[in-house]
Length: 485
Image 1 (cartoon, rainbow, N blue to C red):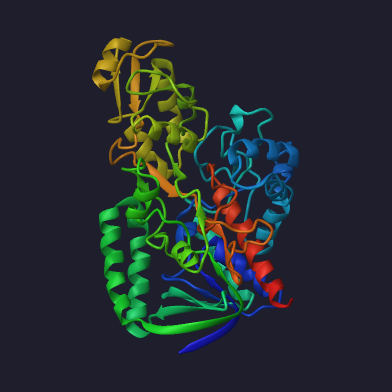
Image 2 (image 1 turned 180 degrees about the horizontal axis):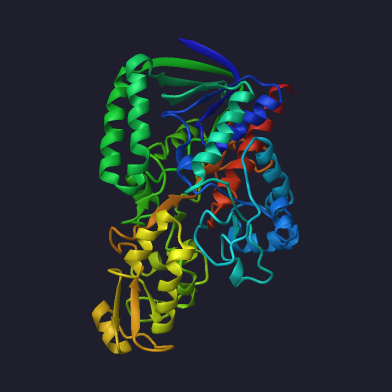
């Protein structure tokens, strides 16, 4: 069986959807493939987009911000993952990008969170989502999709609707297995597609396994394992791409061997993604002649907020030495913890602990409360003196501060079931920063976490989705334009 389109997109998350919409808007016929039912890590995310420089929501909330201020802060985070010109373009286009998402039907809101948090409650949708409050002229740039609970599902649903309105053909339960090349140019994709009852069962099992994959991995692995067994009933399919192929198939956090190969120190964390984040898209690009970079960059999340009072605590390692800054974004401190053998504690005094406990009800979303209760319950030890609390925790004695009694909260990578440590990969295929084309491979483009991008050095909440939109639109627009040249 053979299908023909101008543009083929591999992967149907945020990057794939944005690439498809832009390619279709440029007049191309587009087919999108997804091994599962679409959504990927996007649908499981918080639905936060990092945007600034004067978005509509910032203006309505009375938040002063500028492109220069956004660029200055992000240059500190992004470093040399992309060129200064690309980062400047990302910042200059930021407010327009958010407006484009609204045009596609994604809802945002200007209600500003008054406290520091890793993720706002349903009362707020604009917040300080990175380390901005430890930086001059901080501005809240985390724009959470307006929806109850975690908002990623709503974000993806609206983008999926926009993709269908654009006339894009979506082929779920279809796995890309090889890129077709002619004279060095990518001209299509060889796939395996499910039909009939196996397709229906595969879809049901993968949907049922998505949340358990994150929150109770043994069950998630079992359900996705059953789905994978159904793939033996798939049929071969060749899709010809007259203009080019876009790889937007996510990262590789679900492939333990690949993570160990590139980042062996990153063990014991929770794979933040789906089984589709197995590096399959990246491997397709490499097999076609592409190269990778920053495959050792893993974002490790160790948040100490909410409640916001805990950011006044002090991070210490096994030797009792202070490090990091509890005001920083969780991934910044996560990297520091990995560098210290994965062991760390947050030292707080009695006043901080009491305020933190009082803040739990008003500052935590329902999905955060079980974790916060663990941190402030079984996850800590308390003692009247600094020497005794250190002895209880099994670490060297840190320098005291504040008012006794003291508590040490375990924020290690392996702190226990009640406080998992999410990790996601940031590296991928190297692309031309003006077009999104995989370097050295005509007809092939990459976006999102399948490619090196704005968030490939360090991560703050919303930057990955923002990069998916930025790089997905770039790839979709250029593959369609190249087609007519």
